[in-house]
Length: 365
Image 1 (cartoon, rainbow, N blue to C red):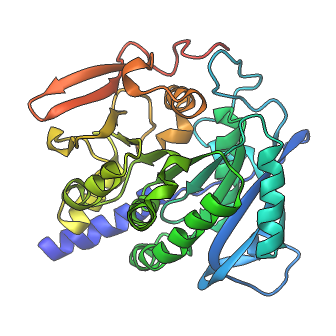
Image 2 (tube, one colour; image 1 turned 135 degrees about the vertical axis):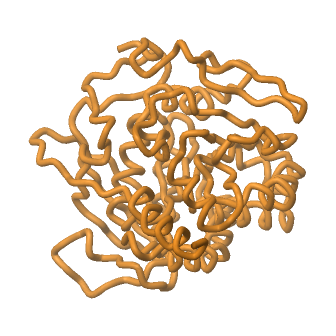
């Protein structure tokens, strides 16, 4: 019976983690240029931009993506208005991948350096996606998040060889581990060659596995780089909670890295991942024992996260607003207006205020 339940849970998990999206054909679009690095294998040339990369492993390649999003797509920057109401139930439907252009490593870092130096903040935001995401979806997610966040730096994503298929969870688990070394090397290259004064790192779901370990290893070996990495943001991490608390978090906090972890009691995808693996995930805050010294834990249970409760970083205005204060203004949890502190015997964490739902005027609209 235990095996049968795990098998059934596996099937349900695949459905819950999947972020199937459709691209709407809106007429007026603005183009967001997003930089990328990927260790997906390059496919044969095709007229379809979405088919340049598949799910096979490959050497690291670099480039830029042009993503079209509706004119006036909103910004979550404090005190800015949403000019257009994005589709929060299916936010990815607002975006369209218009082009993918490969760059040599030299040209990539030269162009990235120029873009960063020309930006107001001289900073960059690197996003690492989670399970069941194609390269195309990763590009669209990054562009939309960049726009919603109101980030005045440069957007960038690292795309590891997720299969982009519901039935390939275990293959994705293997590939995210395989990509860790490549991601670590890319983080070092960003620190040394991008020209960024501040680097913000963010991962979702399974992507947290590689990003946390890669950064911890890099800063252990080269602690002189730590001041460049201003914040590490872990959203709904699909990581064994005990391993995170015992092995990963201390290595990160020992380097002085500013770590924020968003978790929820209502994340159905992570609860099923817990059943598959047998142990609670770090993105599930059902037990306060997850609290780790030096890590700001944010409980997102009170926000409207949709049925699955797993992709709230892009579906909730309230979470986007909080992320904007964190990234754009460097404000810690204790000073962010959407949050209230909760003290337990294990320590302190923060949660979104119950009275501030997504329907409330958290942002000026």
